[in-house]
Every structure is written in structure tokens, then in C-alpha cells.
Length: 225
Length: 225
DNA sequence: GCAAATATAATAGTATTACTATCATTTTGA
DNA sequence: TCAAAATGATAGTAATACTATTATATTTGC
Image 1 (spheres, chains in turn green, yellow, red, orange):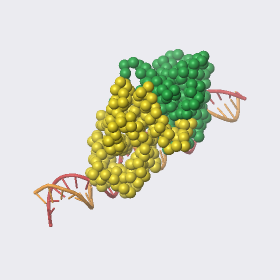
Image 2 (cartoon, protein in one colour):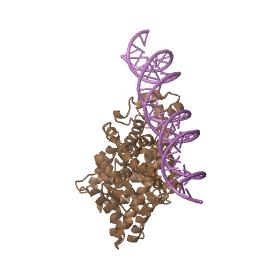
Image 3 (cartoon, each protein chain N blue to C red):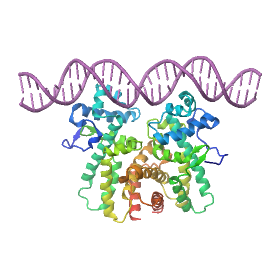
């Protein structure tokens, strides 16, 4: 596997861990294997016990890094959006047209990394899949306000903010950039899931990028319409 | 409270219960109090033990109606979409314009019932709130294919199907009615939640119906654009 | 009105989950 | 190299998500 960008350190709010997992070998092992395990089992069936067994460490050691499996999920998703912001910056750096930049931003959310790509030792391909199925569970619960104070959604907000500024460039009078973008990003993830499990709730096409095209169109029509 | 439409019986797939809860007093009590309790505690903190204590029945009795709390949630959400389809039919019955029918359909998803309205003894106001925060948990998990076979999503699919036919009337060439509608329905629920808990992810306005208007616009632009 | 069928209550029990606590051992870094 | 910190090993707890059994109501069909 390619361990790209070895000097990169993705910022995650310090409310999302007890000990920075990237500060130790065990921490990195926890991250790597939790991504694997959540991808395979889904978040509900994933437990620290199983993770501990897989990595040969006791549960208690994992709890020193993350106070709960919910905190770990928040960490992973926040890391994902931090990584996505890096990709975004690189992707649109030298593009002058805000329209093209917006299109690239939307395409980015739906594009997955190479299966073998490791960033900070994280299999980003699997983390993308986790984000599709599990990310909303970080906020759709009664502890959302607490998680919010702990900074769980800062990276996502920042990503949305950055793209919303592109919309402002295209049409400074457009009033709903955040609303449009979260509709697109969350909708895009959902359509991927529906395409695999609930096809009657979507309109799956043969082309691999039909979802991207749909949402790019939607964005243009809403912003300019 | 008004117990409206006493002769109405909302159809829910028989894979979503062990004993039809509306066939007995205990069953109805389970439904009523589970709606109350899930609204208050959220799905994660809701348990059959707590429900049993609240209604003065042992856990085991609840398990005879629903094999798991997940099945109960599927039942409630399915019931909700069954009820929404009834509302939809009534709401658009005599409207000839498909454009107006579509607008009413979108508005319906975002409109909540009167706080005191009981349908089949269910506090539909609270069930609406549950749908906003919990409905995606019925499918975003590893058991989705099983739940799907049990008919968990039939009522939702049927609702989406019915509205997508209206889109077909407006523009028979439009290729993505289901995709557009699930984007709108799920997005609409999310924006309500963001407005309350994560305002940076939406664009809250003072008017009570800004979400409805946003999505009605989005629909028109996408369908005709 | 009564027996049979069915539903419910009462109670107990199990494996697992989501943690916390304690103490010994290993690793580390100044 | 010595102290501090991290990790491992082990134990324990309250709660969760169920299943099982038997006794007691309640309903129903005749």
C-alpha cells in the first residue's frame, strides 16, 4: 500500500479523544483496526471488546484513547472531513472558475480514494464507506449538543463552509448555500446506499457517476435558477 | 385529544411485528408509550425494560409483539409513512394541477400534525419528530436487506412512488424522480434537525416554512431545468 | 355457563455490552 | 538511569437484549 503524504497530520478536535491516537503505536493500531472492523460489522455490532481481541490488547487500553465507541466514531468521521478538506484544497487550488471549483467539490464527496491508499495509516477507502453508512449517527442522537461542544462537527462545518464560499462567488445573492450543500452531501451518500440496498428509492444508472452529475446539476439549477 | 378517523386502519407489513399491536389493549399501550418514550429518550437510550416499567408489564410481554426494539422502530416508521400516504391522498385528491400536487406533497412531509391529534391512538406529532431523528436508523445498518425483505420500507417506497408519479405528469422525460424525492424528504428532515442543533450546517430563516419553500423551489428547478 | 384456548404476568436466567478499577509490568524520554 | 507514563492482565458492575418457564387471568366458542 502507498502511504502517501507522510508529513501530513490531520487536525481533529481534542474533545474527540482522551489520548491522541497518532501519538503512539497502540493508538494507530486502534484507528487502523477500528476502520476495518466498523466497515465489516457496521457500527452497531462493533465493540471495543472485539477490537481489543483483534489487536491483542485489553478493552481497558482502548478506553484510555476513546471514552466510548461513539467518541471513536466521531473521531473517525471528523478525521475523514479533515482529510476531505485537504483533498479539496489541493483539488481546486489552481482553478479560477468558481463553477468548476464547485463541480469538483461535489465530485470529491462522491469519489472514493484508491483501495490501497493509506493516509496516516488509515485506509481512506474504507473510511469513505463508513462515512456513507455511519456518519449521521454521530449527530442524530440526544447527545448531539454535547458532541457539538466537543468539536465533533468542526471539520464537517469547515468543509461545508469552504464550499459555500465558492457558491457565494458564483451567486452572492444566493441565500441557502449551507442548506444546499448538506442536502447534496448527505443526499449523495444516501443515494450510494440506496443504489446498493434499496433501489426503489433511487434511480440507479449504468454510468458510475450518475449521482455526481445529478447533484452537480441540482446545484447549478438552484444557485442560478 | 381528538381521536380522528376512528375507522382507519393503517397497513403495516406483517413482517414488522409478531402480534399485530392493534389487535389488543396491551399492543396499543406498547405503541402509545413507545412513541412517547422514544421521543423523550431517543432510540439509543430507549429499552424494552424501561417501556415495560412505564406500562406495568414485563419485558417478555413486549417481546411477544416485537422481536426487537429495531423491529418496533421499523413498525413505527412504516406506520408513519402509511399515515402520510393517507394524508397525501386526501390532500391532493381534488387538485388537477400536478405542480400544485407536488408542492403539497413536499409541504406535507415537513408539516406536522396538531399536537393533540391521535390516529389509532398514536400521537402523530411525536411520531413525526421520531421520523426526523430516527428513521434513517431503520435502514442505515447491516441488517437492511433482511428488514427490506420483511417489508420494513414498503410504505416509504409507496409514498415516494406516488409522488414520483406526479413528477412524471409534470415532466415525463425527467429521469430521477425517486432520487430527487428521497433527496428532498431526507434532506428536509435533516434541515429541521440542523436548525435546532447544528445551525452552521443550514440557513435558518425567521419564516416557519423556509425549508418547505427551499425544497419546492429545488424540485421545480430540477424537474423543469 | 363452562371448558378450552389464548394472552398476560411473574419470575428467573444468560450472554453480551459498555464501561470502571486496580495493580503489575514494560516502555519512554530527560 | 531513573522516574514517569503507557500498557497489560485481571476483575468487577450495572445495564442491555434477549429467552424460558410456569402461574394466572381473560377471552372465545359451544
